Image (tube, rainbow, N blue to C red; front, side):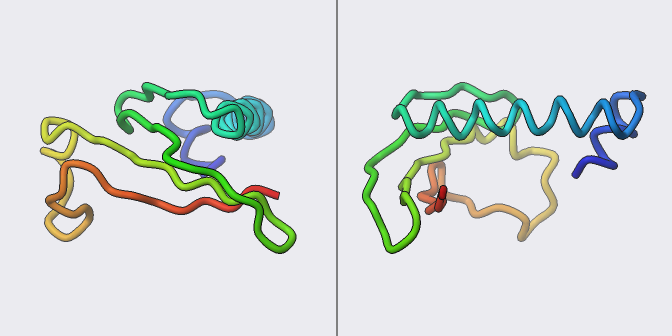
Length: 91
């Protein structure tokens, strides 16, 4: 992912890594707080519920992507459902 971000943005790999790590840390913190995130072109992420697991904090989130965002996706890459539920473990 770092290589792709570096290539797409035209910055050095080391700089892309710093920025990507900072963004992911803030995303993790926002999900931990239960914040709703609007992340174009990814979509809108909202936390449905949270629970403690063995050795992990489990966050159940919903990712809602408008169909217009999925127009460029190849068939089979994403489901036809407007919203999908994903489970993310954060330690």
